[in-house]
Image (cartoon, rainbow, N blue to C red; front, side, top):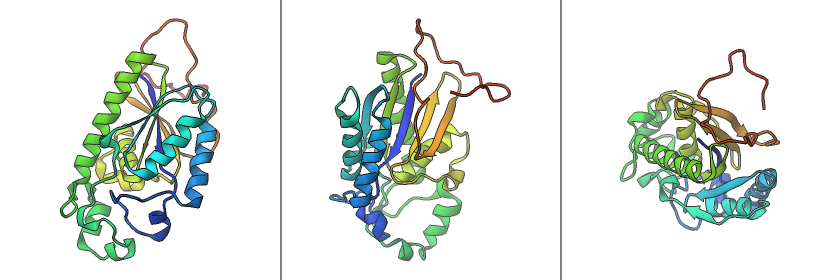
Length: 232
């Protein structure tokens, strides 16, 4: 199967202002966020990325566009609603310091699999639709471009954390232990039996992400390297 580079959007004005933007329209990258998106795009520019898929929200589209246009072989950004931010419902637009006083906050922190936002979405449902999208896109890109293909999914912090929790084989209730910074890259390589988390919350060099090209197509091995292997 292919390898996905999970990219969180760059910093937005809501992030820097301590506001839970959620699905609010018109939330754009701030100046720092634009620089972060450009830096991430440059780090990916030499990679043979087959597709760039994005949440439809503006801050993700801005980040995805920077990546797609930086590639040696530019691609069109494709939108998928299943990568959209969690539906925070009545919490949308609230200040985080005030939301932290809501009784639901402790559930979100300690038992997120049981958390449903008022007039919004459950964290469990968010993970399910994000994983469904990731698996479907990965299968599609693998079929079209081969098991060595790379593709990018640009989404949001909680969405990416939920995908990583699944890839790490940990319960959703542990997903708050995972950190995903603005414009950070996490890399998951899917195989028939298990996913491998190749990079995590990465801000550095992405050299070695692209698998070596094989003369003949063959399925990626699901075996882990006993002893740790020689690396990329």
